[in-house]
Length: 488
Ligand code: AMP
Ligand code: ZN
Image (cartoon, rainbow, N blue to C red):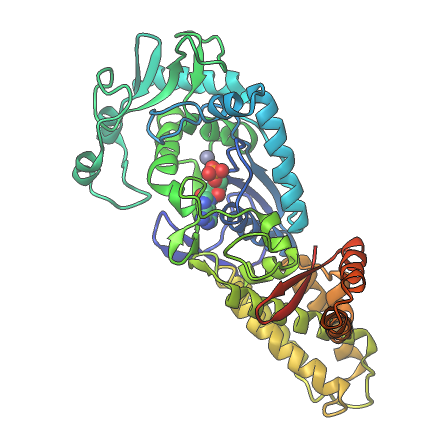
């Protein structure tokens, strides 16, 4: 299948032409969430980025098998076989079964991603559902001579592996630096080498999530699940492996090692990494406490937020940055995105009202369309695509104002490609309020009336206005600069 897509491959550190292993089919694996707490907005950014990639690949006509796992076992607090099990710890705190924790946060994760209008993956396998595949893979790695057992725990033998393969291929670090930077970590007295990591861990008596295996009653290491599940659903070799940039150094490096040690082939042809959502320059994360929840962003209920924003305005905010750039959260940036999103939607709604003229078009539709494809073909460059779409907005407004003309055929083409890029590829949805041309003006009138009531100390009326708006999904927030509103 012909395509002109180029994507940045972390493995080679350059943009490459996309050539799937099998023409017209794409296998893509993305590391999913660890479901022991609510997903924060940073996690959502990564999944929205891969949603854009999934959507564009599909739009180009590829049959995509998109596998995104759920990590529901084996993830200890540290990335290197140290600390408590995240699920067991949370289960104790919330007085629930570990699998109740998994269920609760998996459902929450799905709800949030649905609000952001991300498409579900083709397969969403769980680590606990694939224990036997993980055991089988560990057995193969041992049989191939790249792992060893110590008292019921199995470790990957990095020293043996580096004799045959390149352990630093993904991040281009020096092996000595990796050795020097590795702290003394869990199981260090059992490990043969500092960089060795656990494939299977013998459960301590208090560890609840445990399974029988040839070595001990225990649980899988965190990294092996992705190697085992990608292998099961996409084969020993597949096209794209993705995840957040923070996963490259340890998790993905170890995934490559495990797959090579098992299958004697590198798993993915292209490795794609999304950059981080930051707050005041610091990575948003669960542990540093700067990770606010999507629903706080929608309601504005967080000290960092001046008001709430609709899920689509937030999606638009995310897409206005390239997936490989950091994106810093700020109220100003969200405000600007909200305005931009509304301007785009208003213009899209005008498309139906445009009238064609006889004769030639003043607007070069083919050129606009080609520029949109060029942006996405250049490593899924959504900010450039959005800039091109604002060119389209300008044309739509000129035609609507009678300052430019368009032929019947061109208008048809314009409607079709705008539809594709805005809804199918960027995955935006027209939320009802922003599609109403006058809603800002109407809300300004309502807020003015309520201000008048408050000045007259008629709090019954001002409260009623707030409550009735709330009932139809609009929230008012009083601030020092006046009253702001948003859709809940
Ligand atoms: P976790 O649930 O911590 O395993 O993370 C799920 C996904 O979110 C992984 O692909 C992470 O790389 C990604 N992620 C975590 N924090 C951020 C952030 N601040 N910005 C973007 N992606 C993130
Ligand atoms: Zn993974």
